[in-house]
Amino acid sequence: MAAMTTTPGRNHATDAELMRRVATHEHGALEELIGLYQPRIRRLAFRLMAWRGEVDDVVQEVLVTAFEKAAQYRGHASLWTWLTVITLNKSRTAMRRRAMRDRLASIFLAHTDQTITPRSAAESDELTAQVRSAVASLAPKDREVIILCHLEGKSPAEVGKLLGLSSNTAEVRLHRARKRLRDRLQDFMKE
Image (cartoon, rainbow, N blue to C red; front, top):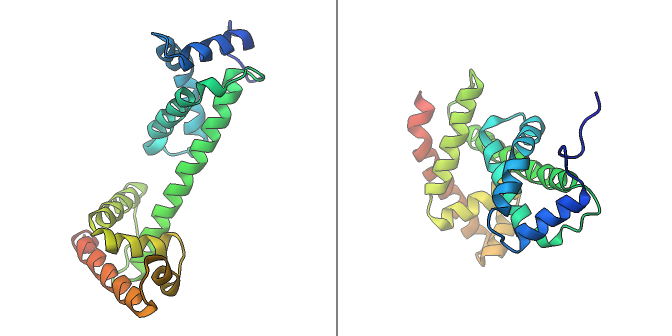
């Protein structure tokens, strides 16, 4: 069975007219766009990401982007093709963010005295949420060095240059930030 490339009863002229209406904020146009395409966007995002937890966020980002860029739609391709490209890009971004969160979690676990072996995806998700929450709770100066070193892959010397600190000061700040983060994660790691 061939995959549909357009919504039944729609053509490029109809798509272009809908997007013109969305771009001019015509009453009901955005609701029509959402009604026509949200289920397909959600299905595509779910298939691309294989991760339910972030699919709704991706769908929302796709629809917001479509709304913001409605005036750029020219009708050279079907609206579904245009939305598919946006969905691909937003899904890739979400997967990169998830990979960075997982990487951060594994880096911090490697710096602890205990090892945690997730017994299930639920425990892994809980760990990611705990690490994300713990990082978010850090003071901005601690969060900066953690993110620059562990997510952006910068050395302490590079972090020092970026933040206007000496290399030694950056290393000390990183050491202290890691300790504060470990302290915040201590209860979770005991479980």
